[in-house]
Image (cartoon, rainbow, N blue to C red; front, side, top):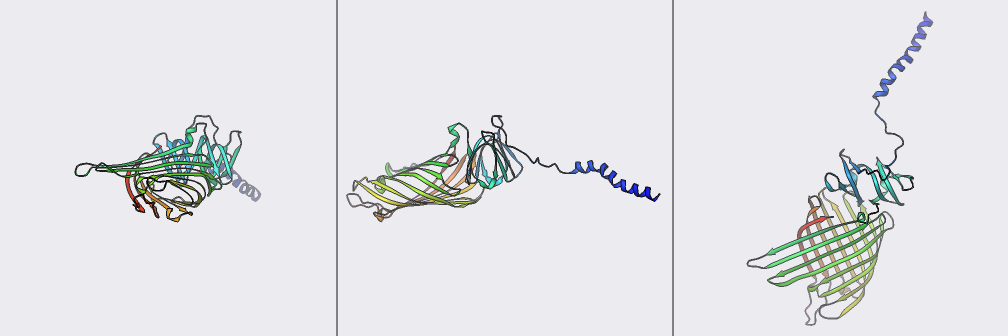
Length: 365
């Protein structure tokens, strides 16, 4: 009797485990498969971006640059948001991933801190999310590499004072995984009682080649400047520079560069032209005050080593507020200075400093 009881007690736990096992298995949370792969190309699926809030966006991921994602949503048009707000991505379309150690192109999926890319050869490459420097579209359409911004400010007065003030700026950029080509223009014109009292133009082009995650080489960089009231008919400054990104966080980005080059200047009145060498130091600071408000500041000094009196400074700071879709309200302050402007034939010398405060609208495209 005792032996039977012992056998019964021994079998009872085993039977209980067999009966209860399925119930316990059903109550366990579902586990993610150990093997997962990015989608195949050519399926016609839309890109997906899931935010940490749980919202999933469908459309096209245009690019990731400077910790900001630009997404063309199927339901909300063009959106931009911080990379830190993204939980996962699924990209059936081709994209170029620039990493700390190189570049890879293909379809992709990101889960947690891991990213997997399927190349055109069918090879799957895995790397950490923290290794990503930028993401750009990698399709065959050339237009996928281009973006831009255009802005305008206008003021008209009539009655006791007849005055017209107009200013505009344009920036066009082409980005790939390893290069960034920036072309920009800013100009201003003003009339008071029919007489021109401001007429200035600044345009530039530069090609940045990324050497590492933070270091970049700018070659070439060319700037054109004209200001009738600074007695500058044309100032052309070609050169090269080496830059570095000192701060790259979700809120603050700060980079600077040092370079040099030739400076050729023609004047409206006075000497015919000058040829000089200038050392150039530039700094750019971007601060995301809120998700909708951004402060961008830029300072550039061209130190003319052959004649320090010709040294010029340019500073501009712009406060932008998103108001609707791609449209922003911009408040811009600009300061230009030449240490000792060249006098005209009558001996009149322009003032060293010029200041401008602009209020206008801009739109991304």
